[in-house]
Image (cartoon, rainbow, N blue to C red; front, top):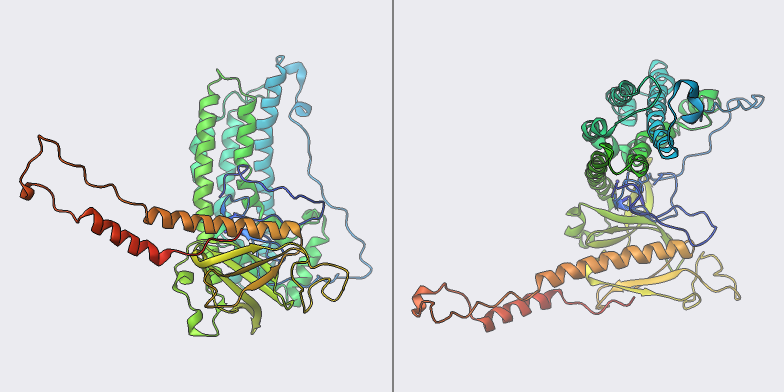
Length: 490
């Protein structure tokens, strides 16, 4: 559930991307929807969004893990083990292969990239099992229950990818070329729905792994693995995140094969169908992950007053985006934007477990007023960067409040930089627009009854009973007036 994580973050691969306007590295906003941006839990600064692409789904947790300590001061770093990056054309014996067109060579390269990716994935899953899971269980570094929660059912996923690899190998001719793959991928892609539970559990799995890293034995074991050549300088979570990152590549890989496939080739229409199938699969996985992430965070909310328990929070099925902002006094807040309500919280620790203490009153999105502030418009106090300087202007700020201004004071919030601020503004505006559209649909006037023509029955008793147009319009006006709000300042 990438993203932000957003998240949330849905899984269509390349249909939703974000471009940074500056050279500063900032984690892109993940939408939940959504494996969407699925967000590393170790980072806390950027907005995470979920909802449209699994690509946007980054997995996130509650707190930063402590820097691992080296096992030995005298131990020299081991060179990383690198994978072979040989191209298909470099692996061919061209004396045994019939001449191929430039386009066909590119097509074979694209198919070969799909094949090599499956081989690498299988190798990484085996490594996660043999180098991490099994030794930690044997050495009692973690319990079976903890390892199952973190690693998932790897034994079920490895044969899944081995089967695709076997089918591609069977379709490879003596000359090393693959004539058709369309029917193979159409039959195989729906089986990727097996990853729904795995991806839905990744947020909780990452949080548990970060918590267990506080144990010196776990920390020492993982550091030794990191310094070993088999890890390629990647930590354990990099291997556990491989399936998610692989899922978002399938649409891209299939489009690349299709791009180099002639229009009259039998694979052309089949590959188009396959791309549609994988997008549906990813959308389904992303939806499940978004719901899981939403539930994960709603269960971690801590309310100081009963009046803060807005029923829209518990009823939420989707977390649009969330991330860290600072308020006017410099306090770090973790802000959650659910579909229908915005919740400001302060992260606190309760017996080694992080929760989010609700700060002030949640604001329903339909009552939310948003104001984009220019740099220097507001004098900020507390620990805001540049707040103690009389020269620097306060930057990257915006304001939110109840539209009627009667139930709560406004909140002036600051992002890390202009890109971070813009991510929040875009996410908030999108949520407000969706709520406004939903309200407009509810309040759309119904069509008036059609006047009977001369052939219609004249007896009133023969006509269907209905309220008068004037009464119906008055009822609709009464209903819609309940949801009216002041124009949002954008």
